[in-house]
Image (cartoon, rainbow, N blue to C red; front, side):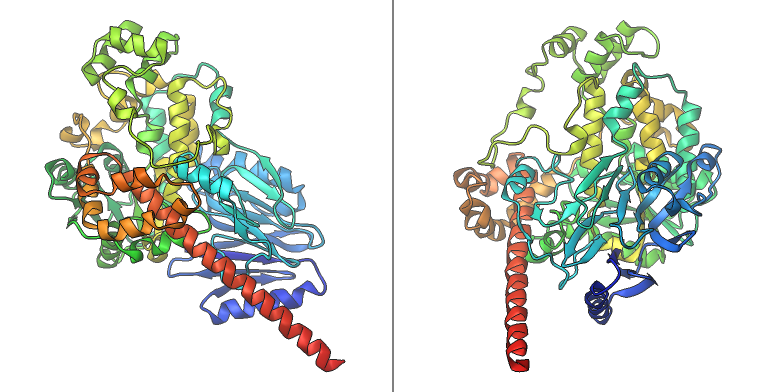
Length: 606
């Protein structure tokens, strides 16, 4: 699912823009919409919807993706917002109105007056990627950068690349390319090159605005999730739902059936290790809905260059495409079910709040609102993690890891550079945000990784309803001890959807664990990873510690030590860097050749 918006001022730039559009159409892009000085192109089997924005002077922009009226959602209805004359407003006012009165999976591009630069808004959930760059006098806004549209100043941003390498989760929104600007969720950019940035929405501000938080009953959470699931399901002919065996995907599957959009089929992935086989729970959820469950066995398969092909070509490193077996399995399931939409439960552990015991204890000790007695709530947390309230209190007060958690946080790093303490804008200022809510904000940043391009997104629309703006805002406003009080995490969500879930999932305390499977997959791929990383550009530039990488890339370490995430992240960035260095070199060569050709023609005319 790819899209590209091409806009330019009137006059001579139109010739360059028309030439680029013609080349893109010849290469497989489809012209979805055109108006004076602007063109929208799409690519892939499941392209996003394009909605023109009409004002007094005609078409002045588009909405890319799906957008819904917020007031209607709050009433439990599914309605598109009124967009007439939106572009006649001041662009910033129009963007603020969309954030307040609408929601969805969209990017809005406002270009009401062609003499003035466009304004771009990315919806607060970040469901669609959006970048801005300029080549000569033509501005491009899109999810991908087609060849032939590269800005002349395109180069690697080494400082930003180091930040992403040091912490892929915190750097989920960074684009390590000079000449390209990313539009962050809830943010709009203005200017022919998108240089002016305006933040209209961010989770930390919402938490601070809620103060000590408010109470929320299970019925309110249930109604909000139902409305968002119904909106995402609207217009779908056949739905495939992934049921992992955990709480969140079961909630989404059960809610789909409750709002009249039962999935045609469900899919579950399992591995040979007992802790990575959740078929029993997934089958119970599917049986309760009366939905056929397709189970897919994952086997250890060595990784190679093709595994990182999709992740390396993205404008920012794409950590969502590093498991090709999973992607291929979902593509096959979508084809088999003839589904046009894939639903997941991604994001539920963040919005419903599956948080560490120490952070939750600190909120209880700080007097945050909770359900019932504070001492009882602390005791429940202790039983959940099998620790005394005294050890929880010590860790919460001192903010130092106890012997129960120290091993989990102390592990050698492969990175040779000092990480930036706050990378993504959402976590740049968490002053006044309680510890459990800080974890929730960090989780939302990590969730942006899910928006990276995948093969499955090329053949079907993806729906992550638990990461919808209304659900995020509701759960950010609820105090952490109310969201996850009791002996079970995500307790408010368990109560809200208990009648739609099998007892085995409601009472389940454990989670599936694929770390052993990942370790064995990496060990089987050691002949690929060793030369890629040890002789790679990241080591050459001093960003990776060669000795640490060498030690980590042994079969024993890859199976028994928890470095799989670090190795996969390093491989993703290494392949990304090699791709873009090659592409930058090719683009500069093409520009130089074009300049030489133009000079020769000028001399011939003379």
